[in-house]
Length: 329
Image 1 (cartoon, helix red, strand yellow):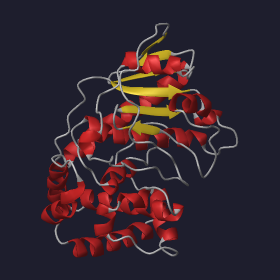
Image 2 (cartoon, one colour):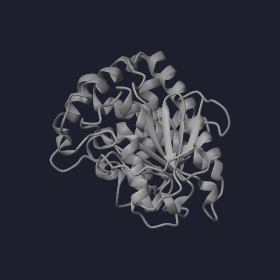
Image 3 (tube, helix red, strand yellow):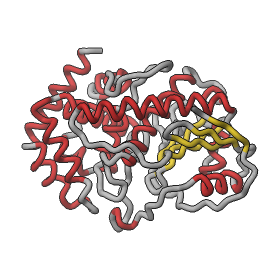
């Protein structure tokens, strides 16, 4: 059951907004970027309802509404109908996420408190709160955001952005991609304080992306857009080997947009293969468990070799898996 009300109290923004930003570059997104000084330098503290409300008011985002569902709490200037549809998508994503990873042997925990979502009426109020410059446009837009430091998911209604096609699909994609990031960090699959390779973090996010516009969807559906990127970009760009994908997070941000898109697409295929290959699934579980103990990137290759095996063979198997995915289009 969901309840909505208008908020008229001022509160303090109780957590930093530094963290993972969701800038899209032709359909990609900036990755989990390790800070200088290692993961211990990130001030990790969940933002609460009072803090989010304070930040919204200070940014001039009003009127503010609040909507509760079973395991989420949304605040923002979006109308009740969009808050309701967003939280419905979030709840369906959580159900599919928990079922999928438990069926694959992962010990994911149901969040013990409501997950916080900032829901904006349009790109302008989204940009005001996050101190960005609207309007969003095709090819260089922010489709959503997940903040690693505060565990806040932020989305806005693409139907109110001018000259944007398939707005409803973008709304679902924003919840599915960034909501999956929030879930991986809220259920124990990943540790927000740990060093996590960008390809793992974004591979899981892209794994959760493909969902139906209406109604529930199983997690792990064929990601047609990422498979299409693999087919298209591999004709123009060199393959990114697994060892580099695991160690060079810079590939996911800056530089060539095409190279970043390829990194995201390969990362999706990487996670897709590990979750769908029975011979590799146990190793992937052990690998993610090991990552939760790491505070810097020093052991990335050692952890991968220990749990995923020879990286040259893993790379060859991934390229074969990509061919199969592309042929399935």
